[in-house]
Image 1: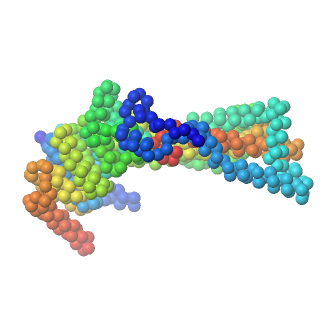
Image 2: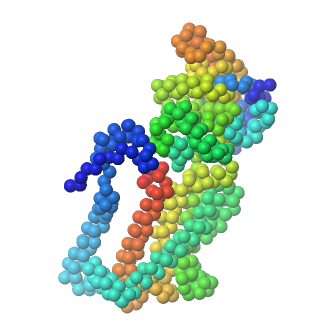
Image 3: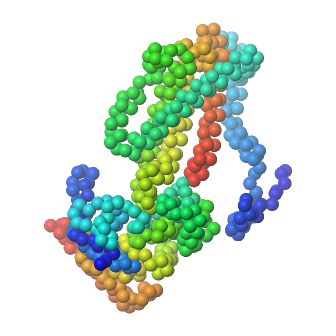
Length: 290
Length: 259
């Protein structure tokens, strides 16, 4: 049992707390300590853990019937020992860091270019009508199709891979930012104008905060798609990375390495999305979807 | 010279099907300084359009709207607006919402803080400064919106059915509060409502609008001293008269539409 600490009577800065706040606090248990909240959040992973255990047993049981399953679906424990093996050789951390860096640079560039472009498209109708056909023309072209040209342009290396991931991440960022700027309540714009806002004020105090929920949705989708494009980006001639690990293991018939690459991409995606959601809570305290 | 001069204003809206619709036709009236002026009419009579023109959100198709002799060309804090749906910035706290216009006016920090304090107290929202609008009830949100509009010290306060989405008790309470604030701050108020009783309770004069195309056919003066008792026979009589008049307008326009 944790001891029940008395609820603080004064907030920081010595400001008096309103009596009804004190009364309300006296009726409910005090807020849980931070470590308990983290444990609480981690407990949401129970289904994921159950599924991993099911995978382990399914794989072992399957092997007793069909020994080929050793290669077709290695159990989690085999994937874990593959990880230990690669970690000991010092290559695993390189794969992870290289892929993570490429995804972050690519999605970061997509955000840097895509958010202003999308907001401008949402806000200026003439700009939108001109840019829309260009965007919709390029968008359906799969990032994979860009690989040959991108190698000609950028050569073999990080830039070419980042370009492929960037192409995948760019459009969700643009389209969501655009929708965010377009969906802003006319009344809020009018309220701003009638209170003396200049166009610049309007951008920073109405359009940007109003579009923020959509912008973050776009960034979350872009991160997800960015990881998807990673394997394509690292397909051809990458010297490292989780996509390279998967492609290389394919030629060596090492399905435990393949699964390890897949699992790590999934885990990194999960962690980055968690960080994004924390960022949303931090930047949008007014938003109800916290 | 009257502070607000609306002369021969017509406004044509283009519908989604591309048809031109006459929303206002040849509207003229004047509002004096410090007057509480209401615009009453059935829904769809163009009273919100009229307010949008006064705010500068839209431009008239014909005619001219002037404030202190100058034609209204764009929105500005001299004509602050209180909207029916509050239009508070959801990402700002109560305090930041009230402060919004003061920041745009680039007043000194200390002055801003003093004014924010004053107006939050005036509308009775002390203790709620750091709440976000979504944490407040409808009546409280509308009070924030009124404080935000008053804080910029407008010469005219434009109110578009500000109490229409509140429950009856809150509405009456807010009407009384608004009168108290108005009597203290003495801005010109142009108040749009569909409620005749509300207009009679609050206003010095009431412009009565007809249905589409909106016209101001009659302006009634309400001379009863405030606070007004809605059960005062003379006021009941006036309300009944205005209601009859509006009824006649509606049935006439329906007859015209049927022909």
